Image 1 (spheres, rainbow, N blue to C red):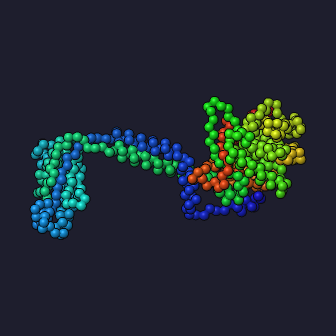
Image 2: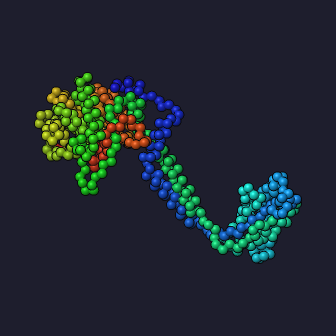
Image 3: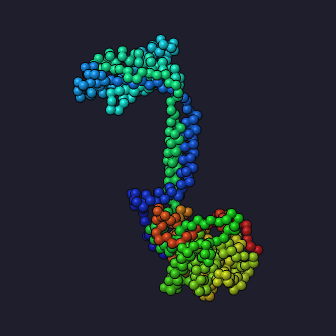
Length: 506
């Protein structure tokens, strides 16, 4: 793919929310379920603790009033003469009583005097008003009044005072209304039921979930991680060679770490078949275009490029082809770790460039894998200079003449320039992208750089794809879990930006 083709393929996103966009957001949230769980737990716990710290016992004395029209008392014997207008008037009187109890001060001035006369204690009108709540019982003309304070005796005294003075206010305000006490005030014997623990815990849990969703969505927006293979295919016009789904492999606690290889039956048939698919597409490209040398890279570290390179080479070797696997990730060699082969005195591309070994001396045949290797286990301090050397190009050209296929593992193209340099000596590039690992911006930079080389960006191997209801990866085949091999790119790759690594083979 040329640079102009690449630039033409990157088009602006359409505005609007599609089903696919919603599904992506759901997948992002689902992938961070542990963040939601932790924040829900923290906020719910905080809500519960707050409810316990702020909890104070309250005691309520309740009164039940009935409102009716004087001309036809619907609560008494005259109810048989009650008309619809009487009922409506009674409902209005009940609502008016509630309004006077909750919105006016005059009745509380009378309650204040009555309480002082009964108990000798004096309370302000605002204190008394804050203690009283009133509600009209649904579909009735009755008013439920509750007096709630921290002292059961105080609640009872206020309630009794209220029943003794309410008639003075109501008869003066509503002469056609009749108010009666259905249930008189009683002295509370136990505190009110406490629902604050549940309420604040629930509010805390909901708040935690909202905060978690916000953090996840904002973080995803900032990182802009790749979520589906369509993100690659549509944005960068890259062919998806294969989709390798994520597989969580269980390993015993003290068992040694090893790479995922297609010769290991424990990886599962889908994983093996995935690399047969990749092999078939490479063989077709070789038949149609004469391609023999393939570079394998990614935009960032830990996307699984080395495992893809190794298994692609193994799959070709298993079909009877002569294959050479070259480790050109000389900042942090990893091929030997994935294959599990010793590299004590092995010579790599560095030794050939520095004249310490010839091409014939450096390559070695591994009977177990039925393929040749050009690898080493030592990082070098001047990788860009080594790879840009004409000897490196001559070495790859020599390999092309002597082998059916040459697979080259390169450093991440979005981190350093090594892959771009090596790609100029290759026929095609296999670009590995791990789902939910790399940002679209990083991929854009890497693909843009690779598209300027002489090699064709043959396509993308979409790795670590999630499977299930929310999966949108497309034709997911395989089961590759992008495992860490206990080494980090950060130290060596960072060295190319101003300071080279001190590690160098003698």
